[in-house]
Length: 410
Image 1: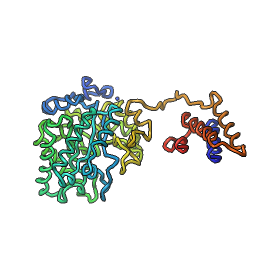
Image 2: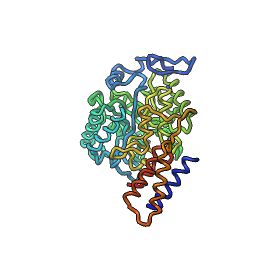
Image 3: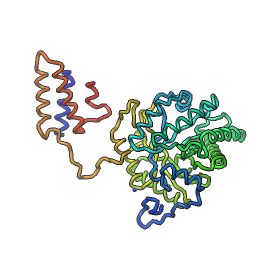
């Protein structure tokens, strides 16, 4: 206690001293730029109706989404947790987490399916998938389902033509279970995640791109009501996949605001040329110099739908991604604020807090020094002073918050 009060008294005093696409679609192209409106002919009436039923605008600019992994699921040897998530599906956990998302007015989710969990028990997987989609929908949230990930999570011969039969069987069973409008909460198919990132060995990328293109043809053949996309890591992949997609998508983990704005505008311009909607289906990572609030502000200024990675501070990615802990608390309040459209003032007219405006800092430090000078100290009185110091530091934004001073007193 003595050391705590001494340190925080010193820190407190030293800190004090020291938003093309046509206007009818709700998007705002750059001045002088002419972008084509979406053409109803580029997407079937049935698929367009799926988007309308989900409450989405034709350009998808009102998509407010998140990627989802449960906090209870554990990584396998390839560092993928979603197989465990489906093997040990937990309705109560999903329902709880969807409630957190609903509080932030989020309306779409993106989730990895598990081919291996499906192989283990197809009927159980189907039952759990239906429950998952219905649970999310009960909270006003539509679902995007990802079918194909890295080769390690699929069949061993995925790059061989022989795998086409298995891939189609996998897709056909999913469509039979929840597709073609059977489950209204299903809004999108993402046929393959980031086929453009694996380059070791170098032929992997070409093989993965071929698998993604094949899966686009399969889904568009099997499901006449649910739009299909490819979760491309970069815009060039999005452009290559565009001919087979109903909806264009890419991921953005850019370092700077200029880079984010460039990629968003590049994607919007290309989508307008293709007469197809576009959105960002992954973004936000503190370890990639890509803060959530920066990405979200860019997507608000240049209207485009988005999915953050990710909702929950889960086991594998929790140290660099996520909004909520299991109990509904958050790690960084600026993230839910940004998700609700509130951003930090970064202009020159910022009003700095004055924690000692009413002399409270001076009084609290004096009380701490007086307590420290006593030979017989009352622990409860000292704890009260320490908490007041911690509150002054945090309320005045005079200390970092991930390891908040008040946390050390709990």
